Length: 571
Image 1: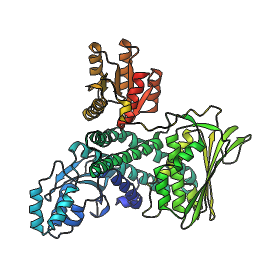
Image 2: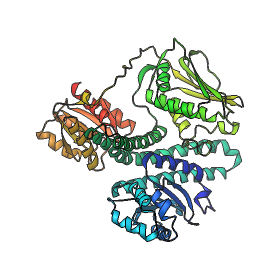
Image 3: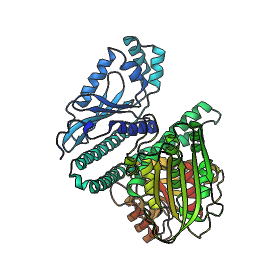
């Protein structure tokens, strides 16, 4: 244990943690507040509602209630993972949980400023008169406060606590390594990086399943609602799409953490890197980047005879996005970013390249910015290590994601930098296989409609069963649900069903893999789609050996589920 740690500031970069919380608030709409346990100082506040900032905390009388609520939430809050919820006299609901590192209470983490049920408008009108608020502006602020069920609220608070504690533990590990013997500095830095990856893996694996289950409703229900309202109601449609987009952004954060922590790209396909690059350059993300940096010129020097390679295009595009965004942000005024591809053949070992002899696809992403400081080069691929200026994008995960993705593709990445610019060089094994990427085409819900076929949904989470059944009904299927593997087997004994949608990980009883093995004993040709918010690659491989071909990650969209069901039933 490290002595003389009196504050979370001693082991955590508050500015970096704030950036991570800002990304979380922007993606999910949930607020965060980090309060030092010793000084009762608000260290981080992200996503706070206007009703609190502009009214409750801005008024000399109502702020007293805010301070009282703060004391009620935090006094005596010293048990690890304890969650305390308080209904503030100002009308909102808040929650708090302690951050305890090695037995020391260093901080409290809060979220809230929400309702558990629709607000009583008359109560807030009365409150406006009581404190002299502008009633119209105050009620408008009240209308912006989301209504969240208690289960979701507790899950979000638990997730934030795990995240902050993990970051604090990472910081503690860093402080420990810095105080060790100087002659062991290089070895300890390597160990520290491994510890960070392990900590992120534990955090990501621990919360990904539950958080992705929560996000399923945030993503799926807006789609269901959009099917039922007139498309010409543009304002409502726009707001509902914003809810779905927020859920998707949160899901991407979880996906990035899982990619970094566990590795293992499950599905790859043969394609051409030039095609992937051109796809990114035609994406909304690239157009947005171009508009943010109009003084940056982008160049492509793509080899016409470039060989194909096996990859996950989604992950490679995310690498391109991270590297090109970093380059654009590094250019302080006018500048250039150039992407170059070519075929190369490695016939003998090369310095700084851990590659076997063979043919490779080479990609260079070069900018003429000010370069990366020498002392930072060895750290840039570490999770949460970032030197971006305040107000810039990022959580410190971008280059860590790039490095892990390249490793998962059996490739290599190197970086060279000086005051004239920076170049990231990527190497991927080439293949003689032909590009089998199917042409993209616009498809709609009508393409996935069924013909009243029965489908059994098996999931231990009631909300997940409801979401899946609601989607299937809208796609013209007849769903039935079971809350466990045992109940699914019992149902199927007397009710043969063409297709099962089966959760891989279930809290009690047998898991999805065991359930499917038992079902195959009675129905050897049973069709199944495996779904999961988080499943280890080993379980996926075992499922493939049983003949499973369709896998869906939670949260999924209507189109993703619809396509999987259609493809499995027609296979």
